[in-house]
Length: 405
Image (cartoon, rainbow, N blue to C red; front, top):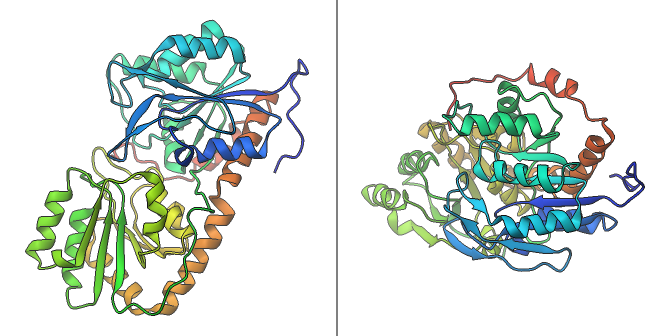
């Protein structure tokens, strides 16, 4: 961890403005809160939307006890790539704070990114712009989005990404600025193992996330059909357009009575539900719109002591490494075998539980994320961040421009 404050050329304090549309509540802004706790000498502020639909739940923004939060009304659209912020509050913050760093959690081709870059050029022209990108699908966008993307890549000083597949796309797009790998994190105080009271006769298989096409629910239904003779229950946390089809698939196999659906719930209710899960499954499959960018539920499960099974889609193997079982995406037979292995082998579950907890502590705590973020800001401001190491690393990656997700 950096122990010395960043010294600016003008001798002043470091002023960081983060703009993130979904950092609405303390539970959803753990990244920012960890940064503020670890680096109180930094003058840190957040701009977020006044409300947003997050994981099928409408969430209203609230203040924070660690730093100022400016709530800005989103205009014209509720689509993440198409909306804009009401510019007046943003301008007010830029003029008052005079940030050294603007950390922008919007994709380079988005309308909001273009808006913020325009406002910064007029009201904070000396700020270093650091993009937080998550897009891991190579796409050639039509005008005006391709113009906006090229402009953002020219203006940004650096970027940080949640996984190697995102870094691949930035490099393939010609981004020649520093790129750091800074993953999503997990609140270890909220997501933690719970004591198991006695031995449960039937273990619980869990799925946590939005029920969308490409999330592999059809593969999961096929795999569970092969395990009908085994004893297990199923807990599904979340909602979405694929729920009805999945319920029917379970019913057709005579398995619906074993499943419990929570529906859409607020994020602060999620940690306790991991304590009811014995094995988490993430069967995402690559589609034209889906390629797993990170898999936040994996690190939440690992921190909660829940062993995980994930597909080979996107960043899933990168996040799991040796702390879980990985199966070839779309392979229901392999998924069934992995789940059965977990159900039958208590020693395996315990070993992966311990390895998952250790991996979450070492790599994915919000404190680790905050430290990486601060160090990267320091490198960018000092001009020490280079692309060379990233470029060398990227040559070893198997980037497929035809990959979709």
